[in-house]
Length: 467
Image (cartoon, rainbow, N blue to C red; front, side):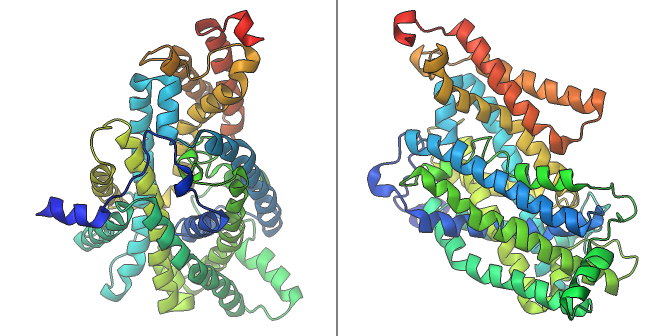
C-alpha cells in the first residue's frame, strides 16, 4: 500500500540519471533564478549571519568581504560549472563515473550523500527551532551537541517527513516550491533588517553607521568564539558553496539550463541570501542579545520571532525547507549512483530518513561554519578532476573520460587526485595552522595538477590524436 502511495506521488518522474537531459526538458533563466533565490535565501542564512556577529566580525570587514566573496562565487558558478553542465548535460555522479570509474565513484557518492544529509539535517533543525516556539520547546545553545528533550526529536522527525515528501517528487517540484516561497522570504529578510535597526535605535544615517560598528558588528567575539577577519568573510562567502561550484555538484542542477549563462542566475541567491540575509539575520541576533544579555541560546526561530513575531517564525520554517529540499534531492541522486537499479524516489526517501535522524543533533547548527567548509573541502577535488578532464584532456594529451573509454571501473589518477589533495590540505592545516576556510583554493589547483600529471602517464593519447 505504501509503495502504491509513493508511486502515485512521483508519477512518471524521469530525472535522466544516466542520460543527457533532452532539449524538451531544458529550462530558462527564470527557473534557476527562483531556485537559487530560494536555496540561498534560506535556513542557513538564519545561522551564518548571527555566527559572524558571534565571531566578532567588524561592520566594514563584513560588507566589503561579502561584496568580494560573493562576486567570486558567482563567477565560479558561471564560468567554471555552467559551461561544463550545459555541454555534457549529465549529473555530477554519472559524469564522474565516466572519468573515475564506478569503484571510485561509489566511495565519492557515499561521502557526498552523507555530507548533503548532514547539511539538510541542519536546515530541518533550524526549522524545528521555530516550530517549537508555541510548545515552549527547550532550545539549543552555542555549546550543545546533543538533543536536550524528546520533544525536540519528535519535532525534527515530523518536519523531516514533510521535507522528504517534497524532495522525492524530483527537480520540478523542488524548483516550484522554491519559486513560490522565495519572494516572500526575501521580503521578510528586508523587513527583519528594518525592524531590527529600529529596535536598536537607528534613526539616521549617522546612527546607522555607529550602531553597526559599535553594537552589531563591533569586532568583539562572544566568549568561547574565535575572532574573524575580512579574509574569513571573503573566503567563507566564496567557498561556503564550494561543493556546488568548483566542486561541480551543481552540474546536476545546471544540466537543465538552456544556456551556460544561467550560471549567472545564482547572483539572485548569493546577493539576496549571502549578503542581504546574512546582514539582516545578524541584526536580528544583535536585537536578541540586547534583550537577553548573557544568553548562550542560539536558536533561529526565537531570534526571528522576537523581532518579527509569527511572520519571522514562519519564515524560519520555510527557509529551512527551501534549503533542505534541493539538498535531499542531490543526496538522493548521489546514492542513486551507487544503486542505479533502485528508483531515485525510493533512495531519496531513505536519504530523508537519514537526514531527519541527523537533524536531531543541534551540533550541526552550532558548528555550521566549520561543517560547511569541511564538506566543501571533501568534495572539491573531484570537481577539479571534472574540470581538468573537460578542458585539458585533448590539449595536454591524455584520454578524456578515461574509465569509460578504457572500459575500466577504476581510475587511479582520479582516486589519487582526491586522496592526495585531502592529505595536502590536512598537512597545511596541521603543520602550518591554516584554517579550514582557506584550504579550498590551494587544494583545487593541487588536485588539477595531480590529475593532469597522472593522467598523462596512465592514459596518454597517441601523438597523432593529440595533435
